[in-house]
Image 1 (tube, rainbow, N blue to C red):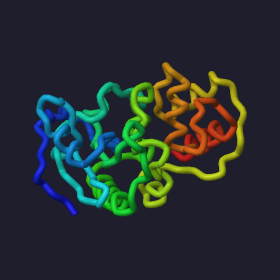
Image 2 (image 1 turned 60 degrees about the vertical axis):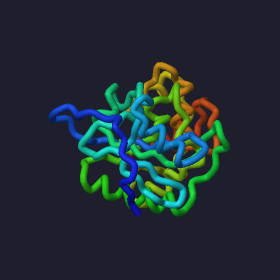
Image 3 (image 1 turned 180 degrees about the vertical axis):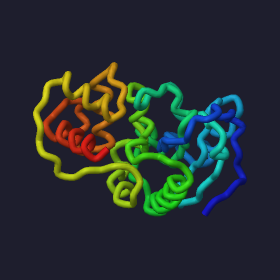
Image 4 (image 1 turned 90 degrees about the vertical axis):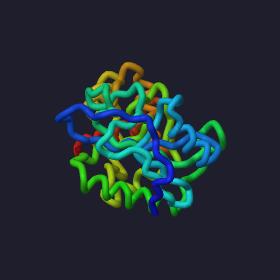
Amino acid sequence: METSSWVSPNYNDRPDGLPIDMLVLHYTGMETCEAALERLCDKDAQVSAHYLIDEDGTVHRLVDEDKRAWHAGVAWWRGSTDVNSRSIGIELVNPGHEFGYRPFPEAQMLALEGLAKSILKRHSIPPRNVVGHSDVAPTRKQDPGELFDWQRLAEKGIGLWTDNPTLIKSDIDDVSAMLLAYGYETADIQASLKAFQRHFCPQSISGEADPVTVGRLAALLELS
């Protein structure tokens, strides 16, 4: 279900010739859907996203996909610092870690699956470039967080996942190089490890390069 009653003024033109090759998922981190919509559509707030999905599955299209929405902020992925110019941003209504973080409801996940699949049909977005806000801004953001079901999305053909990797021990320099090869900015290696763990090892968000984390990272590099 999609509604267009809300439209955000917070966008500009994408650079000519730059492909849309990223999908960035967020949570709103606000107490209600209405509050999130008001902020994303407030000209003074200077933030937006292409879509917002309520917990009941309602999809709000706020910015046309051919425009550059302002959702990622200061970000970095695979060497690119202008993530907004090459991405589509989807906000998921959820109070976030500040206001009572909770699982994402079935209706919301179903709506996300349908929307994401349609986006992937329209744009050449490689699985490795389906990311969370915390992946592209690990020192600033935690969303969509450890309760988000990335495995479910990957099983639907949206993003990457791997199960039961071989346990690998490695020193921090090698792990940093692996994270960089996958796409993460690594100036703050602990923050980047936590972001990776929120996405791929949500059972342990330690910021440590434990054998499970390193093994999963190695397996993902092979897949990508």
